[in-house]
Image 1 (cartoon, protein in one colour):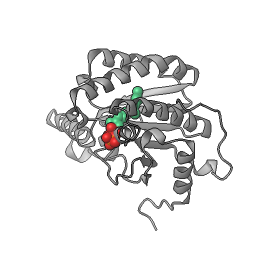
Image 2 (cartoon, protein in one colour; image 1 turned 120 degrees about the vertical axis):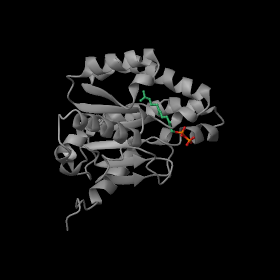
Image 3 (tube, protein in one colour; image 1 turned 90 degrees about the horizontal axis):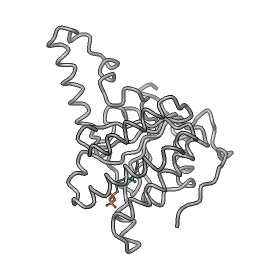
Image 4 (cartoon, protein in one colour; image 1 turned 180 degrees about the vertical axis):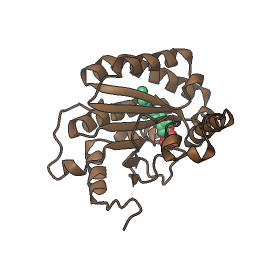
Length: 248
Ligand code: FPP
């Protein structure tokens, strides 16, 4: 059964001034969730979309300004062909179905990853959703699709090496700001909080550069079961952290 969507204010125990600006999620456990229900793996992904939609709405209701979701990694191509096909079709369908609501909810959609190898029809839907929502301002919603942190860093390095080779910049000009301007995420701030579901203590090639000072929260809950109470717990944990950014 689909989780009902209910508008809700920030819970009183959470401090608005200590909310993360940007939350990123590694949505793990869809396959296991489905298996536990005696369903095919793809049903877990379908339910995963509902959990993601609810989290996006919750972020907006509670005042989180950016949400990034790891939807498909560069390694996920190694899954069975039917599952990969299902996911590509699912992304496209969800984008088409949700675009109007994203406009109504003032959500700016953004995609990061190596997008030019995705199915052409999905690329077209991605371009359309990014173009149509580009002026929306309530929340930035980024979907990492065919994303790999190492690949992102390699691509940035290659692009900068070309600039040096062409004499456009000197090696000394390469600093963090220049490097970041060549990452897929150049238009997004770094994540403050990274949430991983299903209990795995891994980063899985996600936002390797960007997560330098992110707080990490891991829950055993499988992604389709991740709900507002779980998010509330993650934010409570985040608000108790002492973020020092390397200082004392
Ligand atoms: C990991 O669980 C999940 C994925 C690889 C896919 C996540 C995608 C969605 C939830 C759909 C998002 C849709 C849009 C439009 C952004 P797993 O399959 O690895 O689970 P397992 O570890 O239990 O096998």
